[in-house]
Length: 152
Length: 152
DNA sequence: TTATAAAAAGACACACATATCTTTTTATAG
DNA sequence: CTATAAAAAGATATGTGTGTCTTTTTATAA
Image 1 (cartoon, rainbow over the protein chains, first blue to last red):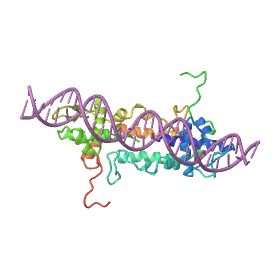
Image 2: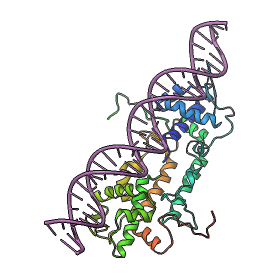
Image 3: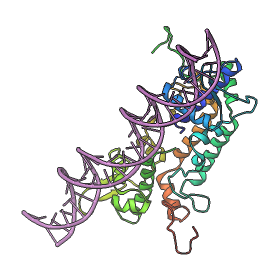
Image 4: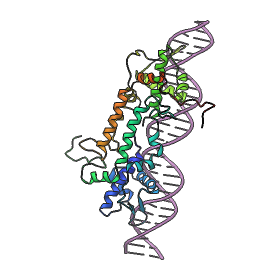
């Protein structure tokens, strides 16, 4: 569904937001460790979302990533638009170059319904709402560590 | 969402079904022309669905693709399972290696709802139901031809 | 002002999906 | 039996997403 770039982007932003609340400005290496993603690639992804203005960064000693106006909520949709492109929610589920109500593919109506509900979902969820779940230990940003007692 | 392999597979099968009703056994070149797909790659895709037993084929003069028991309905889900793999409907929307109700990612519950509705859609739609729409000119398998009168 | 720590940028590597081309196998028509 | 037509198979090519590595730029600490 969503590409790795988008997945790492969202998970990174959630982690950054949580750390910001603690007064920290994490770097991409710390971020990668905490969301279980490849370090270098995560740096590249953060360049993309930073250039797009979704998050801010500071170079140099003591630098890192942070939200300038953390009170403004950032929807997953805004992230997806940057990382996947605007066409993402407009493509035909059947692969047709042109497909709409006037000129539908055979699954157009049903597919549009599903697509809309996914659109509505990512439009409703925000980096802040996801961060809140994680902070309350109701969800995780990476797979849990394997403990000595865990069964494989 | 779905890969090109799956898209061409479904569109090919719908075309084959429609031609079968007319007593024809189309070859992959004819199929590719009529679903607007690359010829050689369509041949490869048809090898995959044929090996999986979703459709039958005959080599040699007068050969082509056909449904052995065209009365048995074939869901899009069965096609997707072959072309995308069984994991397709079980992957975390957030990219986590393990994600379930016990150990959810921050969008688990909402994402599962959307995923289920897509699953339900492809489980309900069949090659036959799509073919019926196309036969009744209620839908198309490829973009419509540009006519001289059409506006670009 | 110099050393250091961090992001940014650029070049490169790899895997996989997508696509093309050629050869082989198989069935039928004549 | 031979020529032909078709799918199957194999080899190769291309593109994009994913990932790594090195160098450059920038800010801070000392």
